[in-house]
Length: 395
Image (cartoon, rainbow, N blue to C red):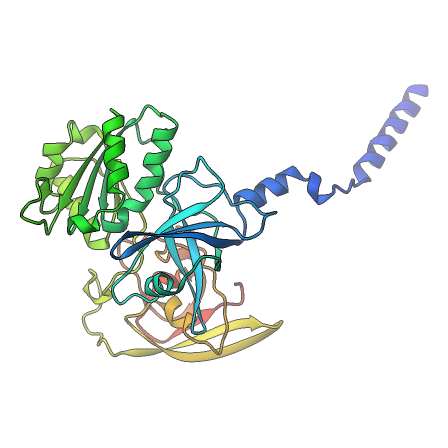
């Protein structure tokens, strides 16, 4: 009898404890604070330094605009999406972080002027010290993975594609990691080489780092490598090239060219990774583009969205040669804020429900299988082929 009473009392005690809820003050909830530090929904950044890197590229240093909100930490090779508002058009562009992840006081970005670009000319011509920008958390999968990438790495950069490598090189050198790096850096001319002094200095000090510059429009006095980064350039300058792991960052055209050259050398495809490459300069030249479409073709885009707690529907005309997200962002009267980061269909921040219609997606863009199955598209890299109906109510 007494044993049963003891069991009953113990059961009642456990029941009481299970029903009690202890309120934990936010400043004591270390997991939430850590999560917010690692994955902030947005970051507000302030420019503290602007420096010319070349005739068409500038370095921008950003600190947190809020002293109580430190910058999110990142892996060397990642990027952040910077939000700008240009004449009422709110949009995002990704830029690789060039600063080392071993210091957390600031981010540094290298931004190059893109011919006929929308955002980079605006930033280069208008941004000044003290300006505040909204940014994403650090994103991207272009970073060193010790489990799969080995200890012998080959970096192949084209032009401004050197930016993620600068952060990776600094990280490896600063921490004295036992990793060998060989960098092939292709540019048009000597004037286009970024971080040349730093790279050459590291080469003279560190045995595990080598760099070769390859100029496609070299001056007659240039004594280095000329032309493109072909299979012959790779095989002549990289020992045991088949066994090494390759990182490629540059233009979309460069990616296809380098991939074919590495394939000729017998380098396994799983030994090669590419940084996200953004939208094509001319989508009509991408393999699979419907030849029957005219460049002037416009299609009606219907959007369902929520604003001020109410559901709205609107329509507008969009060009078949412009990414859907760009077209939506230019509709100033709608005032929609669609999250985005990579502008390449990789980060999936802009995923949107396609109710009806057909789109063109460049064949080298990988979309998650679950998005395909459930009818979601990434409008940052999708082009209308017919009239479309999009559901933005979940954004």
